[in-house]
Amino acid sequence: MTRLPVIVAQGGVSPAGRTSGFHGYRRLVLEALDAQSQQDTIEALRVLRNLPGESSRDEILSATLIRKLEQNLFDSQAIPMHHAIAVEAGSEIILSSGRLPNPLPDQWQMEKLEDGKVKVRIGGNQQLMVPATRASQVNAAGQLPGGFAPEKLYQSRHHPRSLAMTVFGASDALCSAGLDWRLVKQKLAPEQVAVYSGSAMGQLDFNGNGGLLQSRLLGKRVTSKQCPLGFAGMSADFINAYILGSLGGTGTSMGACATMLYNLDQAAAEIRSGRRRLVIVGNSEAPITPEVMEGYATMGALTTDVALRQLDGLADGEDPHWHRACRPFGDNAGFTIAESSQFLVLMDDELAMECGAQILGAVADVFIHADGFKKSISAPGAGNYLTMARAAALGRAIGGDDALRNRSFVQAHGTGTPQNRVTESLILSTTAKTFGVDNWPVAAVKSYLGHSIGAAGGDQIMATLGVWKYGFVPGIQTTSALADDVHSSHLNILLNHLQIDAMDLALVNAKGFGGNNATALLLSPELTHKMLKARHGASAMVQWQQRNESISEQQKDYEQRCLTGNASPIYHFGEGVLDGADLDFTDQWMQIPGFGQPLNLEMPNPFWSF
Image (cartoon, rainbow, N blue to C red; front, side, top):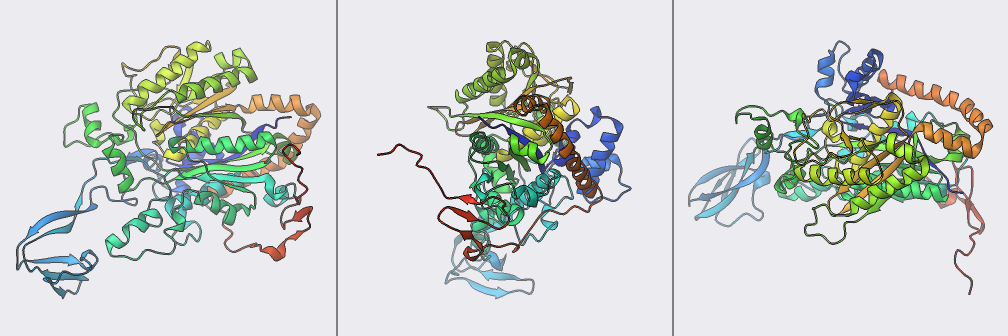
């Protein structure tokens, strides 16, 4: 019988704040919540940002979501570059020692100065590249809350930003589950656990691939860590080695902006088949670097300051409305880049019941399709019609026509580009019409968070799980009106928060460069409970509820530690290291310390006999 992949925990950090405790979601719909929920989330943000207790509400909320680029990432007004100048014979210039040509031309005479710079006398007419700076044409980004520095929460040892975010995000997910992981591992064999996590673009800051490529150009030495820590799959490696201590399956699937859903597909498929019973799945992306923003801006994909001023009729000297840079399905000019780290803990339904784990929802399936032949590798194609249609069809098969037509909603990819607003709205409108949906609610959380590339699907799932907890689908409040070319037939593209009574199904959509389309079908906690009761019986549900009471207490304890600043990420450096001498095995089984069940080596022939 097919197993159901149940979501038992979520964790991470985004421009909206900490994911656990639903705080990231609550920041999106803050004004719609009751006073106590608002205050709890504001306090969670204050602690996360390391602000004093007397900080005002406005001060705490100010450095969150999409906003003007902060200089702790890079100075957008002084991006390093080189400028060509013509130098006549006999001229003298002053350079930093790291900018000198190597080897030094024979005609140059050098004199060292006290401040680490050198004076160079040029012999012969030459054209010289000298250091200079320039201002970025893009200044809006979805940044982690100001003052939050994940690398300072543990012994990071020059880890790239995305990996430090992984340590925080995966730890947040595991701790917020309220489970004793030593006891959970006693129920499992090593091969029943897996971690699928990565980043679509790798680690591109100076501690990763960025420094690997920049160091020699800057006159610095490449370090021994920049190359290995730059790998896109290093996020999963860190979780295995320093957080979970897993010897099970590992890796990451790459699908550009659909990467999170690609990893979720692998996790859910392996749980459904019984190959895995517990999977940590997620993505961590830190693409706010000058080079990445320059690349997307050159493609014409990012919203520039000039374009924002034109949209709002502002004069050249006026500051753009950076917090409204991303405007899905409205008059817009490009997407807004962002950073985020989002993780889910999945269990099969039997293990979740046995552990008394919290049930946040379930993953019915993830559908992935390419676009086929294309004119441009970055242009959208037909594949997303297939993924949306299959997700809608499965939702109908599980919940029935009424659930799909009246109790489902869409988390759109919603990048905020002119091309996306036309193509995705047409896909959603066509799907709704085909399946008899008259007023399909459509949300687009990139309007708050920006586009975190590989982690974007995780941002959408974080917001979806929050909808089922608090009953508000976030509206696209940065968009004042739908653009004239948006297809809105059979859709309710939400420009304001929508309060709902019941939603059984959510379709999470992602469209990636190169033709990477994915749509996940998620099931609500209520529908998941009904399915578990039908499979396991009412008595088993009562037993699950009894076990869940202690889990809920542990979750409350973790939340309280977070709110008092006493929660630290899990980071087991050099602890519990195993080698061959620690393993006890025969030709039929292998026992690994920490796991209650042995690795089974009695393998039947999976193919036909000959």
